[in-house]
Image (cartoon, rainbow, N blue to C red):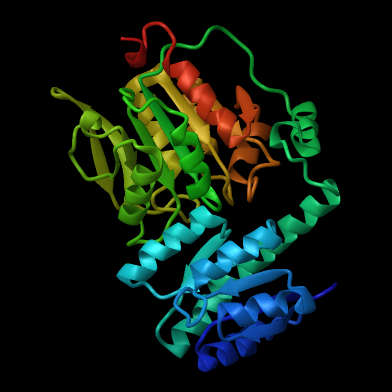
Length: 367
């Protein structure tokens, strides 16, 4: 097996040495090069030919965001994992990095013991997954189409998977969205297609670390013009246009005499996720029945699969992001392969379809 080549970019020589030592314990990992700042990293990219870049945020000369912007212009699909500490500035910049095209981010621990655990339990699994997925994509599509709607992988996926057909869809009273790896940038695209005076509530589960949800909500608000807020317990569903589940808490809907409100709790994770999309989707199906439109976007794992089944069983509909435009076609792919999806679309077309469904007669948007 050819080793996975990593470029480590971090201004701390101690961190670079420790990461090199810990990563190369795996015989299938090779540190192709290290760099103390973004300028050095960009200069080393062509010579080192890495399979993945591990990129710090706070560096001299050229910081992580500036480096990522430059890197993406020349290497649009090279996997990049941001690796930085949780600070107020770092949180906002980590979220911005996800919008700029970083594939994932991992919080950098403060101690050497915690770093060793982080490398084993978080960093190495994500490196392997991202590199393997990109390798598969290169084999499947030698050249990437400039129009993702017409990509070979999209067409192949549509030919291989049967989409649902059935009776006319009910009016939509709530939209539930699931996303994980690669999700923030896709969410911005999807939400930007919705009407600025959106009346139908949208609820999102984005797998993200504790402390990042509020920053993500703020950034989505800025990018889309919608009112996007971090969910809080017992608030009425209509108090915001878009709600994002708070990291570390499951989000559910509950009907009460005053209407429908948000419920947060910390019951055990599902699929190692809390929040889990399955929890939200099931509760939406219970409260709104056939009036739920579920959306499953890019992400690792199968979170959203059983929840999509609950929505379909209640008479609702589900649409998913297509494989070609997904960073990881795990969550959406599992729903599509289970035959639960009505449509399999690029992010732009997902947003358009949601808007179309919301404008149908009898919906809130049509009033």
